[in-house]
Structure formats: C-alpha cells, structure tokens
Amino acid sequence: MKDKNGCRVAADDYVRLIQIDPIVLDGLPADEVFELHGMIGKIFKIIAITDKFIQIETYIEYTEEEFSVHELYLYNSEEFERVETI
Image (tube, rainbow, N blue to C red):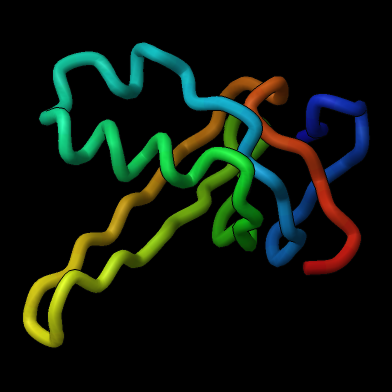
C-alpha cells in the first residue's frame, strides 16, 4: 500500500494521520469523535497492513482504571503519510 505521496508503507513504519473518513465518525458518540479528531496530525506505528488498508491505534488513559483504545483502519491513502522518524 502507498501513502498520499505515493511512498510505500509496511508494517512497523510510522505514518502521520492526515484525516479521518467522515463515514468512520458517523454515528459515534461526541466524546469518541473528539478523541479520534485528536489523532489527526499525530504519528502512529502501522500495526497491521494488507493490500487494502493499514491499521493504527492509540491508547488514552483517563485514570489508572479508565482508558480507551481506538483502532483505525485506513483504506484511503489520502488519510496518511509516511514519516521517516518520530
């Protein structure tokens, strides 16, 4: 799979999230949409990849006992760009 600039990406590469497809956000609670929007512009390690999508995730800790994990499957290369280092 390639990023928005045509660069090949692979598992364990790092990418910057550029945008999130609005369909992904449709119907989600406002607090989750807010957290997902907070991922835009940040860098993530690709944890899985196929010829159709890449998978990234984030972990948000609210307290020692409360946390949230968001996994995003990015199908559109316009949603991310490869970065060389973090």
